Image (cartoon, rainbow, N blue to C red; front, side, top):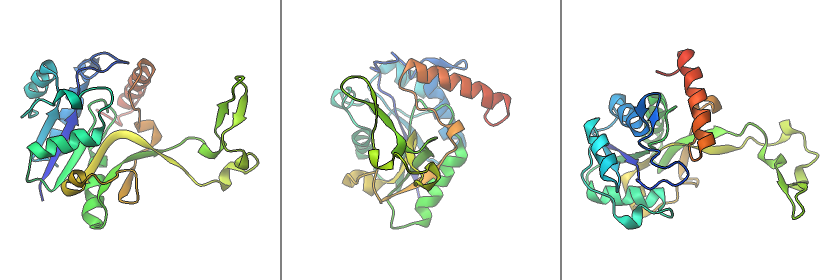
Length: 231
């Protein structure tokens, strides 16, 4: 069994410019994911997929491999994660498992990466395992705005249903995706019954897309560090 970690990190992030290289607690954000993957002991190689020379230089300085630069068509605002992983695996044959580890996941812990690999090894009929967290409130009771800006129930049929009677719902935690290499290369759908959940507590999850997300991640990280839950 051989495993590769692939960290996607394009240079042209828009909402937080250069976010993969921005300092987070004094360290470039991507370096945290690189060190976590290396220190986990799960991977034969930790590879960064980037189109950016500066990101490549920083990644290599911190122990990651950058054996290729990602083509421009896979580095724009419309390129999906799966396509980036497939491209990387086409350059990196011979691995049984590939784990996409996001560059902006400062709260990720190695124990959840290990859980994902363990799940796939235990369930030969499944293709993927990835991090999810539960919604803090039933999604069936969500509200939206109508054309006049007034609140309305997104799912009116659940308006009177007690929250404890509604099934729990989960969201992608935006930290990692384990997959069998052949499943990635076949283009199998990740959000499907082919996947298994690695359930991460909500207080250990913060996807980072906006400046508000970044600030919240800093607050969470500081609290977790002070409490000894993260180093």
